Image (tube, rainbow, N blue to C red; front, side, top):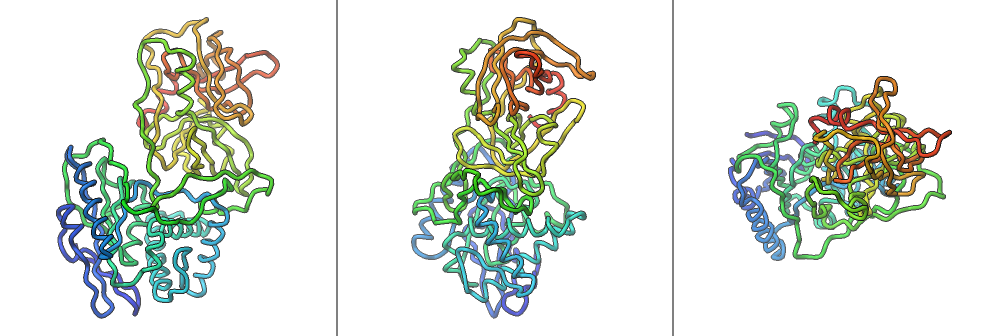
Length: 478
């Protein structure tokens, strides 16, 4: 594949002028620079064998040694961060506004570099053009929000290495399992500022239009598999990145104004080299043996609190959600998600607040919806109906009533109802406003229902959509 991208008089970028057919070939090739023209590489490595983890760690070690000798910059990215700081978002929005007239873009980690600012501006313009072609219904605000993400991600991934940027320096970036088209185009943009990028598509290839996929070359490492990719552990200290201090709404996700000053800020977890290492994931808990209440309470790590924001950025309500797919899929009620423009998701023992405007699927009759965040999750198993549920059966409910994050209560199944043609479980475990979307579990730790409603006039008269409706609705996400 040979593709020339014109970047104006300063620099011309030429893609994939040599065939790349292995990980070593990508690591060893160094694109030349001559008379304003730079050769760069954008490659997808598909699948991998059982030794892929060892091969990636060996690549990390090799490139770290090269970096210590000042021969290049290297990093591996295991997931792009959500922008959570209002201060940062405001900075990048200002740069985008400035870009409309000056055709230059500035980042936090690199200021007052004329060549880079113009190069980045043209790269961003190129990617936004492809984004518009790919998404025919793109609005002005959607384009602005995406541009803000592109700038923030560039700052996060390259960090202080930007301060040493020049058109001759070699930048090597590996990224794990990139599926989203927006993220794919971001990595393409990095090649337009001089980076060589390899996407490790071990689980599946990106689903994108052929002309977008053709921006990158490809080679096969092996069959697709679900083996975990080891966490990147750089030998050097992590580079400072733009701070993400606040839980204020992300303008990059919704183009919104700041919330009231009285809202409490939450600090996010440290960023290392632009990557967000995933916590060690335990397999879903299931089985036939009954668990203690203490064991069931530990499953709260797979229940989330959802803060719902309207289009002005105001937090209008909170609810709960259940992790039902490891690739970021969260089940909640439609009456929770349906009123929001975007959502801020909190996970137990994780200081990061995950913001998303992705509602993947909903059914207003069943009162179910699926949203997605950019994080690998620990899904809970949904009961498959091996034994009929009965009245008097013990249950545990986990949710965030009145914003009290992941409260656990116990009770019994008190009846079975059909409300508006939907099968419901009536149960006595106490819930309140904010519990909607939370899990109702049997004593084996399986989801038998999703908390949906309570009858205020009665005491502990609570309803959950049952597991049969849930299983039909989440088919394909689990």
